[in-house]
Amino acid sequence: MAVTESAVAPVGCEPERTRPGHVDERARTRREQGGARSAHEGSLRRQAARESAARTYARALPIVPVRARGLTIEGADGRRYLDCLSGAGALALGHNHPVVLEAIRKVLDSGAPLHDLDLATPVKDAFTTELLRTLPPGLADRARVQFCGPADTDAVEAAFKLVRAATGRTGMLAFTGAHHGMTTGTLQASGSACDAGAARLPYPQDYRCPFGIGGERGAELSARWTESVLDDVNSGEPLPAGMILEPVQGEAGVIPAPDSWLRRMREITAARSIPLIADEVQTGVGRTGRFWAVEHSGVVPDVMVLSKAIGGSLPLAVVVYRDDLDVWQPGAHAGPFRGNQLAMAAGTATLAHVRENGLAERAETLGARMFAQLRASTEDFACVGDVRGRGLMIGIEMVTPDTPPPSDATGPRPPAPSLATAVQRECLRRGLIVELGGRHAGVVRLLPPLTITDEQTNAVLDRLTDAIASVAAATVSRGLGGAEPERARGLGRMPGG
Image (cartoon, rainbow, N blue to C red; front, side, top):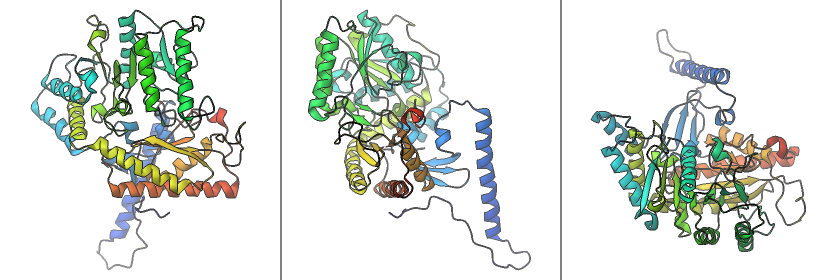
């Protein structure tokens, strides 16, 4: 499929002869491009020499951004990209949206203090007012807001401490495939943990159902498993302090929870006085087609963990919870950077813009269109196992086409991390930035901003389909795609994104 926009700045042809003293514009262009490439390569070399080996995105995306607006990033080498990573979902309005920049400038020009600890300020008051306006009604009318450290993992840690203090219990329930942060406590509830500090329950999914059946029956078995763990006196799991879940698992490869299953989890936890924590760090602020992803099911959690998009591109994280859980003692959970005025101002502008302009509803409509087109355009590619997601949270799982399913001839083929990496690389060559996820980094993920236009959507779909077609053709002609899941596990995945 043809690429609709050039991903690389045009390079001039050989210059014509010019009269003495005439400025050779083409030669100047080549010199400028050569200087840009040198600056680009120098920045990447210095980063590799100076920064930690823990860096992730920089390895797969050798880009040096210098300008950005909306969906578009321009690199130091002059190349332009369509960004469907969006700060790992933090940029609901894309890069440098005018309403965000205006909100930040207004605070800067006002002379207001930028660092306020947890003091009351007009900026914070405006943020909490707008945030409460967006929450599910059953929570908004009795909510408390806890400002914690600026990262999502800080909010999850705070939520864990909160429910433990409120219930007097210590254990936590979490789900396979979960990703809740990168600190010690949050990792214990995440699917990649080696030293588990929480009981793991099966998360329902259709394509790789833990029970091998998928659909409503698979979700029902997951719910029954949860009830058994809680009610069996010999299960080895005492009544927990809380249950944490993602309405759509992002890092696990974009796996939406069935609405009926979410309602069952709410019923199960409510009947046993277990606080239900919804991790809306990546799914919130319109991403899935509702302002908050739990709204698809009608579930009202006891606690919501919010970050990423709520800061309008700046670091901000909060915990919202029912007032009867508010048992904190002063200073029980604090930190010096919980009063970021710029992030609150940017967040207020973002929340209001999404709400007032119906961007959640647009995400639902546009996401359905993208799913339909991707499924239709990739149905003949044996290396594409599944296209799934919700709203503008999209995943394409790559599989090994030449390897039979492990047991059931009708089941899914093994994941193909090498093919997912190849698709990401081919996308980058075409000027499209995508992320990888899934248990073996075999899922190509898209998180475009909610402001993406119809024209840009067409360009994204063209480039992505063209990249997949190129990888599929290479797989057939050269026999690529053999998965090495144990070696590849986690290498292409971007935790904490």
